[in-house]
Image 1 (tube, rainbow, N blue to C red):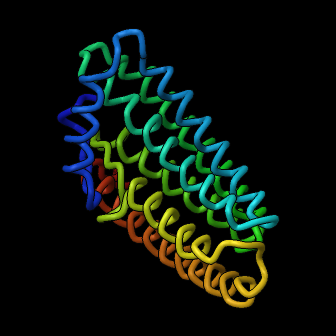
Image 2 (image 1 turned 180 degrees about the horizontal axis):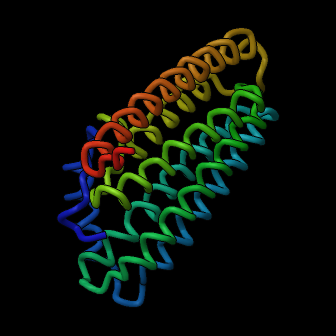
Length: 223
C-alpha cells in the first residue's frame, strides 16, 4: 500500500509513528524488514507460552508482557523500516503483514485461552471475530483503496498495552495462583464477552455501511 493511503486512526498512532521512524533510522543496515517480522512472530509465540505457563506461577505473566513488547517491536517496525529505507515491496509486504498478523493473533489468543484466566472457548471466539474484523479491513482497503489499521480509536498497540496492564495487575501479587482465581477469571471472561459483543456489533455496522457505499458507487442494473 502507498503510504499516503494508510490511515492510522488509533489513539497512539502519531507518537508511535514518530518513535518507530526514529528507531528505524538507527537500526544497522544488515537488519532487514524480514528479520523484524521474524522477531514479531517469536514475540507472539513467547507471549503465548508465558500465558499458558501462568497457571503454574503468575510470574510467567511478566514473561508474557515482555514478549508482547517484543512482538510490538518486530510487528510494528518491519513496515516502518522498509518505508524509511524506501525499498518497500508493497504487494509482498502487504500480504506478509496480514498473514503474520493473523498467525500472531491466533497464537496469542490460544495462549491466553490456555491460561487459568480465560476460558478456551471464549478465547477462540475472540480470535475468530478479531480475524474476521481483520479480513474486513483487508477487503475495505482492496475495494476502497484505503488501509485503516484500526476500528475507531483502538488499534493493535492499545490492545497490547491493555494486555500488559492486565498482566501487571495480576502478577504484582506474586506467588502461585490461589486467591487470584476467585475473581480474575470471572472478570476476564465477563470483559471478553462484552468485547465480543462490541466487535460483532461493530462488524455489523461496518458491513452494512460498506454495502450501502458500494451500492451507490456501483448501482445494480434495473431489470
